[in-house]
Length: 125
Image (cartoon, rainbow, N blue to C red):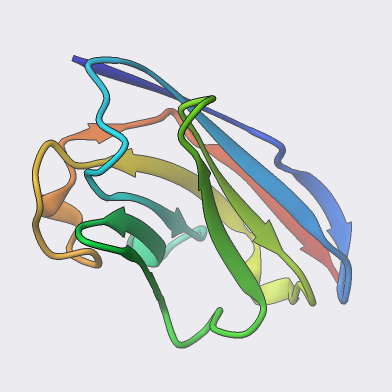
């Protein structure tokens, strides 16, 4: 089992920044993919970013956040981060951290077996 705990959400103004953290514990692997997803009110949960290490560091982003968000990983701390810059009101959502137990599609939700409880991010205009 893997436990994931997100932190760092909150309120930001448009154009501002926030950094989310996801601390993993249990049977974790520093190689298997971890990702961030988000769900806005009335919308389905969507992929945001993912990171993996399979012969080299791999990162992947949704088009909507590319160039503004950066995912990173501190293996010594078993923690994944999502640095969010140039925030927009449409980034408002509950953000979820997720982890895979093998190597599968980075953006496909069903590839992820473990999920955190989520952290709220609200961006005001």
